[in-house]
Image 1 (cartoon, rainbow, N blue to C red):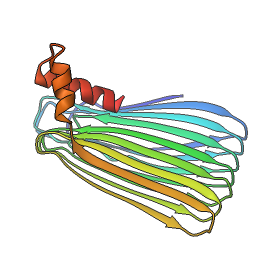
Image 2: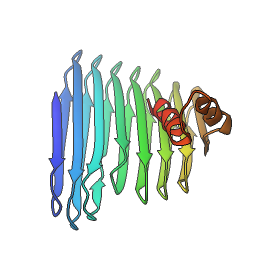
Image 3: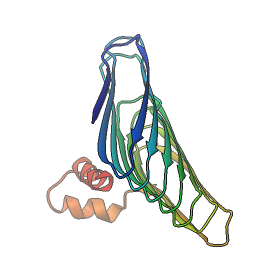
Length: 242
């Protein structure tokens, strides 16, 4: 299932709602492409509210790609809200990416997992110039054997700012992993605050966070192969966000 949403000029404020009901045992691929474009001084806005209801033993792959384009001074905004409700032994993989061009974005994702459900989240993000991006994840594990693996990889360039916040709550025998890896370039800034709550003796929860600039020896190694410093940095970033 493909769900494109495009704002093609400034002065448009778009808000869409999508509810997905996935039957027991179903296997579904959903692709959402969201773009905002402005060639003038007016802002362009696209906001989407998505809710997923996964039946028992169902399988969902959700791909979401965001982009901002246009030569005008008008700002471009995308603020997605996602809510996931997973029944027993269901599986969902979320693959989201936003690479430059969006002036401000605020992603809010919440999920509730029943017994045996598994959720994988992969976020890839790059900001530049004065862009601001905020990611807020909250996952509640409410059934024995539930599991979540949340990984965010980001690059903050120019004067951009990123704010990452994740909460994993384990209320049962479960496993949870949260990882935030960020690369700084120029005057980019990143704030990462992973949070864990263990409400059960057998809740196994881990979080990791790493923020830093590209290592000089990596740049030097690629330059010995004939790349400029800018080309070497871009190669490293492309591989990091892949």
